[in-house]
Image (tube, rainbow, N blue to C red; front, top):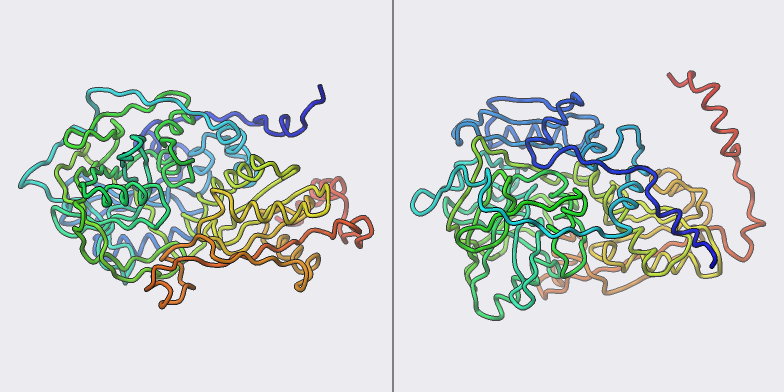
Length: 494
């Protein structure tokens, strides 16, 4: 039997090892790297949001733990900017020397080639139940929830969080990251774009005329958050994937009122129900496109029935900014790996790399590198990338390049586009593609009609297959000479 070269390429070259299981252990690991800073006394009204905006754009900035927030629950804290510096590698369980393309590939080969799944383990108790708030005592405003952006319509406790829901027909559990706004002491609202798994669940309950049980996990370990905000296949619980990544089951407890499973070591859990037809104005909120794309509109409200929290609880904050920002950084690494794996599993051969670029918050600009094998190979790879599970939502441009291009380097990608594509023949357009009400380029009239579709451009930036061997040579040394030059003369750059 002939050997499959793809199988060797998919074997992990670097083996993952997660050094933490909850947010507090993650903070201690980040402290060992010297990448955590404590800031005391800033207010939630504007100062935490202003400080976050300064650091979230800087990949070298530390994680910041805001403490002693005036007027909030004593001991409660807010952590921001978890995905930067060397802690990016630590968060994903890999050595700190890897560059970002190597890190994304290590994530893919360790976690995504064979989607490892381990069933969660149910336990009877956990730190999440150190404090239980019910009845008249419920007050979600006690926590140090910032107003993240100047023009936001309120305080958003859910940014680095996930919502737990159960499909009422099929019974599977979804963990999805959707923004959560505080309405008052006893109610919150959350926006979910059409087509997302949590929205599918909500629409099913609405059609049945039944209340939807929800548990919102505010403050989880960063890997769990990354999985809840990634494109996991329909019908697969993120808890199983989190367990597969850890190599052991996630410990869950059943929320006492809804019965929904929540992490036993979560920082804060908000439990309640969304009643059919119960809506309030939600927004605006500065979103990941870099705009206030969805303005204010009526969205479902969750009536809070209980709040559980650990002593000295920590909110994990991950508020979007104009990209590139923290969200762009973590999405680029994880989504690039998932997009590449989606393309390969669709049967496209010799996909050598993929990168979901930070400037497009890892959605609007995808670059895919291939080793061309036949005419049409580049267009095939581009169209699959645009419409695969991880690439289909709210995309814009897919650029396909030869394998001599570093897809994570925007300069190289644009150079290939400018010198290897022909505007009249290299661009395909897809219309009526899946987008979102957050998309700032959809006309207000179409949004008013519920039309949230957009178009995609697939740009073939490979050397034309039929005469690629005659294409002019690139004006640069061979890889071997470049490596030698760096070794001998790299000191001149210092």
